Image (cartoon, rainbow, N blue to C red; front, side):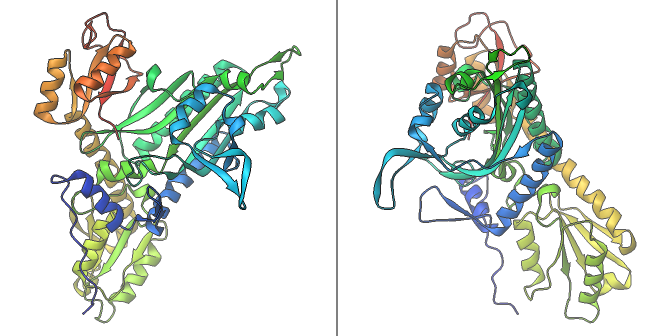
Length: 477
């Protein structure tokens, strides 16, 4: 009998959603806290999920012609100051290095919160002619933002991400790139992570510091709060002018190029937890799950059981499969892999071997099915696809259930009071004062102006004037 304990119970999401979330982060062995507030250890299981996200996206970026680069960690203060809106937007979150090797530095160094200024400095040195354009770059790095309130994955002082940076000869090319990369993110979230998203443009007050336009994908979590899952920014030639990046066009004239940046981060891992998890723990989409199927031997001490399990593993080489032949009890193993969100569990014991079959259990719905061993590989592939589609439909149903069309402030308050948090679709005049008043009166911030448009009424829900946009409003992480 193993002396290991059964998997500890986690807090119910209906009792305390925030505690449920942090319980999963720790007990599913995704992260561990450190002695520096707001910083975390990404443990092997969590790291494996992030690596799968990274590898899938990295292949997609390269298919579109992007190349990976690595920029420095430190940014001189004078370089950061060159674009005033950019530095103003990040100033409250910047961490500074003031000493090196025991000596005070002559100029403070910013620990990279984002890398626009570094890319601009590089572009100014390497771009001279229209023949040097476009540059389609990306990097996978960690960044530091000195958050006051922290939570694993959602807001940490250091986090991992990718940041794409491109520079183009024309505004049209740059805008096309900005929109194209948002589509890449949206497709990845929906097809790979099974998280439905709303695509749209950020309001002027909520756009990225220094950008002309910011596009975003917004996802609704199980508790009705919104998560910004990815952003893509069009800079125009603002950074190029600030950093004196010019090139000679075909007419041999000196002109400014146009830039973009776009990124996703380990924040997506928080989104996976909150969109799909349940009171047993993680529920992982198959494409990014470190283990897609776990084999649990039943009565493994009996002759032939582990040998048959080994044969099954050998026949499932197209999938990420783990055989747990540890001396923990079967009940412990069931709870452990439910906690870790493994999409499919395969159970096999002496009786199954005699009937040349096994039992498949899908994590997201708990359904069991007895299948012939000869068909296991094909059926497992179909089951993983069922998990992928099932998770998406479940998350989409949750979003639809918690999306409210409202034509007045009273209606907004009533819907939220009756049904809880969610997306509120309501009309807006375009004024920043009304945007601020919405947040003050309801706690809702603008999430995005959806690309598909739409109309609830003719008037702004705040001031009553002629409305310009339909907006998705919500409480956000």
